[in-house]
Amino acid sequence: MVGVAPELPTAVDRSIDAAVHRHVEDILARYLAERRAELPELARTFAHAVDTLTDFALGGGKRLRPTFAWWAWRAAGGEPDGPRARAVLHAVSALELIQACALVHDDIMDASELRRGRPTVHVRFTEAHRAGGWAGEPERFGTAAAILLGDLALAWADDMFSGAELEPDMRAAARGPWQAMRAEMFAGQYLDVLAQAEGDESEERALGVARLKTAAYTVERPLHMGVAFAGAGPATVEAVRRFGTDIGVAFQLRDDLLGMFGDTEVTGKPAGDDLREGKRTLLMALGLDYATRAGRHADADLMRRALGNPDLVPETLTRVREALVDLGAVEELERRIESLTSSAMAALDRAGLADPGVTRLRDLAVAATRRDR
Image (cartoon, rainbow, N blue to C red; front, side):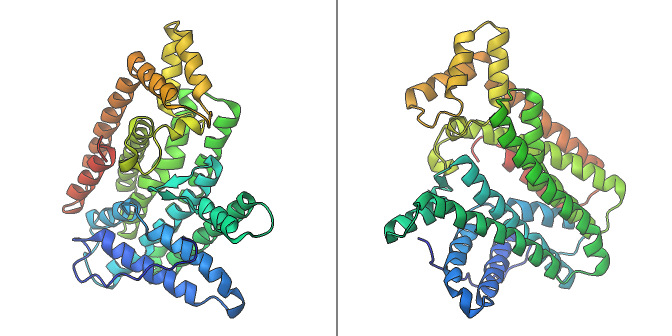
């Protein structure tokens, strides 16, 4: 429901290492509550909209980005507790607001109706407009409100990062990856919508989108931030970024497979949504390439007609799935996920990091790319 603030979680009383995601949620909830309370009297109505953003940001998700950043900090020698550790945790929790911005805007661009099994933000405001019998077009209002809240999430992410009580050298070291991450995320999003507009079916474009839109801000730059906070040298940074890039791309390739074949109860989005939205994923790029090279023009035509078709029926989705399996595109994507994961682990071995951080980073990488996530 629009305008209902969630209850704040109780303070987490265990070590950060034992429950990173719970600590992140606690910090994020309290930060959002503080910012809501600061809104001037004239903006009290807006506070109800902020409640929707808070509900969205706290209503699901694995807190993967701050968790990668935290364990990179620990693996590079960062303390498990104390003022420096708490400052780092506060700074990396801002990654969840970057994620909220990206998801809210992505759902608008893709006209998605569900996210994490619940109505997307623009749909919530559209429904509120319709239920209230307000003037104008409900969809236009819903889009406008969601754009503003996505922008607010980005602004507050910067505020949250800047407000962390980091030592000057730590803040300076992490500023570069923080800034690069934001630009890369938007560049990847633009490449994604451009590929749909141009009908670009190339493997190169699909991998470029995966690298910038997902890998950079999901794994690579959070890891970069974590080791930077700990004062890591260039060789460690380079190895960690390679680990992050390969795992991040593998994560996106697994997402592509789940988007086509996954269970809605698990993914929180309707099966085949990427196809309906016209996503030029690597899975589709491989399928079209293999079909064309094999002279299976009927299969290629089937996939092209399905791409971007909002009225896609289950029977057509089933046929596309069967073609992708039969052509070998699914098998090739699985092979690439395995190859990327192996190369990522090799890079992690070269990074010169320490336990318990290294072991936890390995576990996170495996979890991010597994078939049942």
